[in-house]
Image 1 (cartoon, rainbow, N blue to C red):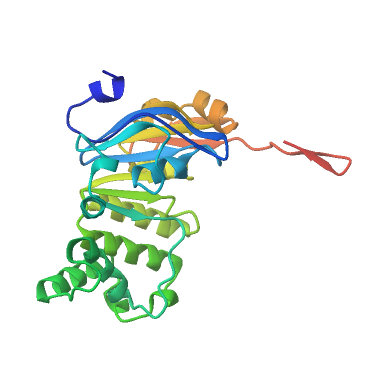
Image 2 (image 1 turned 90 degrees about the vertical axis):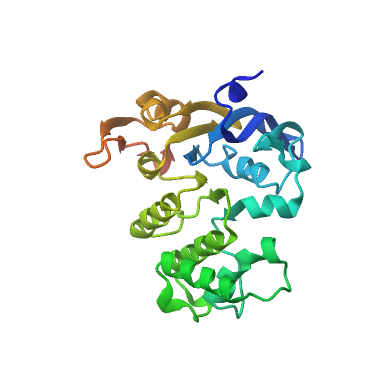
Length: 275
């Protein structure tokens, strides 16, 4: 039995020897890990490392050529699609277009896995929708069109939709990449406050350190290290994977690793630049 399965019998989701190719290129290469129920797992790596591809395999957008992904010890491709949607919610980096839908309407879409597309929301459903909207701080925007919201408000609305969906697992693919710092922190703290299992990819390593119980680091499609932030976020890893020089200290508030980067990577000579 592999290490990923040996780590804990209580794992909610497990990937075993996961590999995926596209157009003849190996994007994910023999990846194995497990995610404990109730944990917050961050996925890190430079651009092109395979973060989004890995998440797509986890929420069944693409099927790997090799290996398995198990949810509650069942192969996700053997689970009924609607049953899987009841348990797994997804918030992506790019917010979808919901023309002419209000915030209430978008949040109500979280009911679809449970009630179907054409079912009407009853009193209990509407109370759940309103409660979720209040929970993400958008009560004053309930009847506003989704398209008119700011980026941070859209992400909060999509998390409200996920709350209504009542998932066991929330998967987030760099949902804060285009947001101001305040909203980056707010969105991730909101996700953490839900008390469910979360898997999220990050660009901001310090934000990942503050939010996550465990980290997975990808590089060129391989899982190069995993574990608690104190174990993973080292000067050596940052040099090897991200190609930067950095110093690791302890954050004054959370006592987690905090990264300070060195600068001076670009040198100009005769109008050219070299990294």
